[in-house]
Length: 442
Image 1: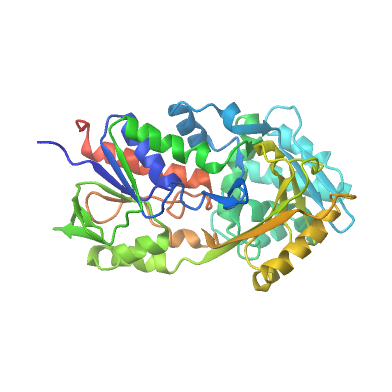
Image 2: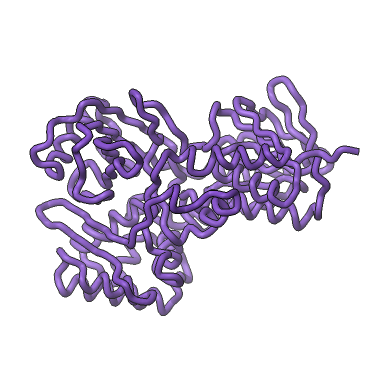
C-alpha cells in the first residue's frame, strides 16, 4: 500500500524547514499553504518595478540551523548574503555611536569592541564590558526571567547607555520594547552571537529578496524529491480519532495523514486546535499570546544615493534602523524600519513618509527627496517576546499522536526570528523521524 505523505500545513520558513529536512531523508511530504506564495511573513511584494520584501530582515552568523539547511539544498551563503564583521553604527541626538568587533578570539572580539566603542564615555564602556563579562561567566543564563530593562538596571547600565546601545539592539532582535522584553530570550541571542566561533557575530545582509533566499529553492528541493507544495489551499479542520491525527479537511477535500505538522501562525493554530479537548489547553495559551508590529517605509531615491553604511541605527527618531538596498541590487532604495508600538501607528502613510524622509535627510545631506515611497505595516509581525512568555509557548509535541507544532512562537528559547522558525521546523522533522522510523518514499 502506498504510504500516506507527511502533511505540513504552512509554507513559511518553519513549515519549509520541516519539509526540507524530511524530504532530504526520503520521506514523502505534502505542504498546503493558504497564501499564493511561499515564505509566510518573509515574502516579496511589488513596489513599482521592484520586488521588495514585506519587511527588512537581517541574519547573523550564529543562525547555524538556517545556514546549514540552506547549504543542504545546494545554496551558497556567498551568493545569498553579504557577510561583514559586526558593526553597530547608531546615529541620533547629536551623539554618534560606533561599535565594531575586533579581529581577536571570541569573546575578546566583542569585549575589545566595547572597550574601543566611539561615542561612549569611559565609564559607559567599562560598565558594558563588565556586564558582558558577568553574563559570559554565567553562560548568559538566568534563574528566572525578567524584563531587559530590569536586567540592564541590575547590571549597572545607565539610562544613556541603555537608550543608545541596548535598546536599539533589543528592538532589533526581539521586536519588543525593553520595558516588556524577555531578558532570557535576549541573552539567548547574545550568547549565540558573542560566544563560540568569532564569525557568529557577523552580520549577514541579504543580497536578494527573501523568497529567493530560501522559500523558492526549498519548494523546488521538496518537489524534486517527489513532494508536493500546494499554494492557495487552507486547512479548515483537523481530524482527530482516538487521540491521534488522521487527517485534515480543506474547503473541498479530506486529506488523510498519520503525521501532520501545524506550521501556521499561532492564532490560526489556536483556532484549529480549540475544538479538540486534548488540545484546548494549548489553544488557550496561544490565544493569550500578544503581538508586535513592524512598519517598513521604503523610499526610492536616485540610483547614486547611498547611506554611509549598509545598515544604520537611529535614536530619538521615528526610524529605528535603516538599510541601504543597493547591496540587494536595488541602488537608491532605502528601507526604514520601526519596530513595535509607538506614535507612528496612528499616523497616515503620507504623514509617516514625510517624517521619515526628513529624518533620512540628516544621513543623506544634499540628496533630493525620494522619487517614490511606500509603507508596509505588519500588525502581527511577531509574537510579543515579553518576560515570562515561555509559559505560553508550546513544545513541538502535542497530546494528539502524530500532530506536531512548528513556528517561531514555539518553545525554541529564541525570539521571533527566521532562525527560531527554522529550528522549530527541523525539531518537528526529527521528532517525526524518531517516532515514525524510516518510511518508504511514495
